[in-house]
Length: 263
Image (tube, rainbow, N blue to C red; front, top):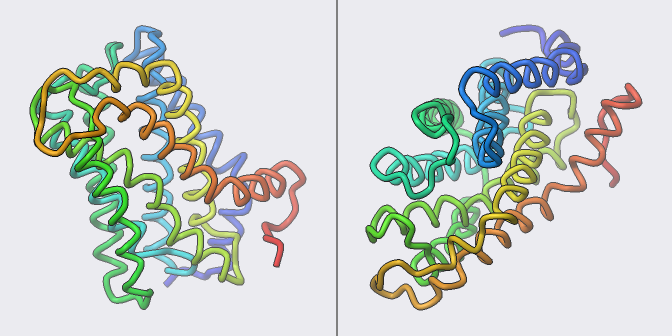
């Protein structure tokens, strides 16, 4: 196993070791695979998520400190549900050229990495009741999903993927707040996932009305006409649970001080 002191030293410089790489990737993809449409925010959000998950994969290979099996499991479900929609239909894809194939590829990478992380963490000890966090998003998706695909199963799965993101970061947030060592890639993961939610919110605040249009009557979908509002709410709830962490993360990065959270 690698010396954890070296891992902390690498993780302590997100502005030079992590975020510069993210910025370079975003610029590269924007000029190579996007035609500048506003919907690129959706692809950008997925890319930030991808870099955070790959960073978490690096963390897991060296240490499971501050990492949550249930967060990895939730995100595995999120990407599985989303891919079941976007690989078959075009209703929820970005409008720009990044939605031709690049966005889908990023989500496939996200799913693969999350499944691997969940497998590596399968023997860690966490409260099994954490699974119940997914109950409310699942019920909300059942009774209030969008219908852009005009196909019941994929519409349901896409909305489920969005609503689950509201609670997916809660387990790892709890783990990090209990951790004595915050200088690791788990911190990058949580901060980047929060930023990804902000980017996704920016996109949907302009486009949520499209989700409220009911294109087909589907079983039990009594609240489908409000799915755009539910999508925005899920983004805000996710940021509510992790926004304080992002503040202290950015404070540490800007001031160059050790990452710490208030008691």
